[in-house]
Image (cartoon, rainbow, N blue to C red; front, side, top):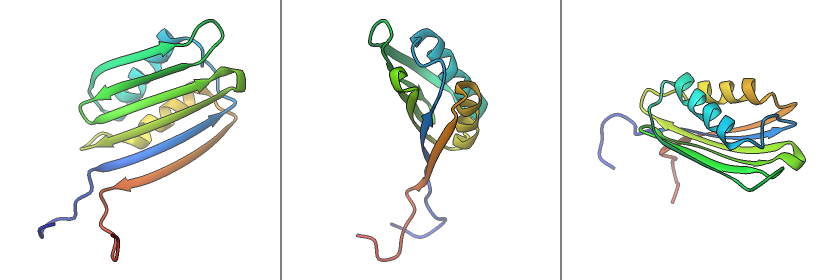
Amino acid sequence: MSGGAPFAPGVHILLDLHGAVMLRDARRMEAVLRGAAKAAGATVLSCHLHGFGEGSGITGVALLAESHISIHTWPERDYAAVDIFMCGKADARAAAEYLEKVLQPQRVERTEVLRGQEVAGAV
């Protein structure tokens, strides 16, 4: 990599939401993902969700100009796995906070990674 300012394209957040609500309705979840993008200051390019049938979970993604937010739900376990990656001025942490507020999990496990960081000695 050439010299200059350090390259850090963005923040990648993984959320495990245990005891969450609203995990069955794809239409409502699309509104939730769009709300998370808005909270982050991101631009939604498209949004696609798929419900697996009555009482089953959802999988979906909001494609953003700044990257994406994806979700996979298991309502029978009140659990959702969320993946948020944003670059530029979009705030991935604001999206995560919005999702936590709206989906009301009883317990959250959050993993954050700064993507593209150069680590001394990394292969």
